Length: 205
Image (cartoon, rainbow, N blue to C red; front, side, top):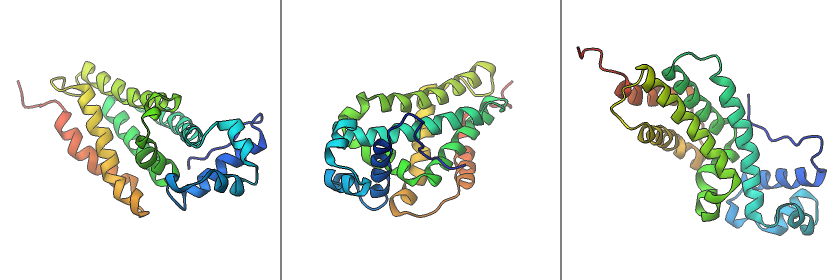
């Protein structure tokens, strides 16, 4: 199941064309080199319409990312519904994250390489969705600590950052250079490294 942006029935056609135009251009070049005029030409609209809907290029970028994130978070929440146990849920969330980066390279490039250059991104509504996903991981970790499935002598927040950082660093070269990768293999490798360190020591009396 790939991540796709699809406008709702009330989405103006021009709005959807502009979003799709930026997505297309991002497959060809970095955001910093994409001009207002190029977006308008690719979308087949005038520049005034882009300004009307988005105000500036960065707001357009954040909106594209926001729509990807909404789809991704919905998918992640669905993936862990039937999972039992915190470790199983973590594995499913990690696999979902890797899979999203592999299937939607524009999503990965925006999130990993583009928006972090702009301080106002961290104050945007789009970033609140990133926090929502990060809090989802934290909740699962704390659940595991509470029930004894994950050792509780480590920081849940630091563990979350290690997981998120591990996901990014393992797939970053492929994202940067356009190479393929296996979400299943990377999930297995990351879980092997991390989960063996957070499971309770069964030999302790």
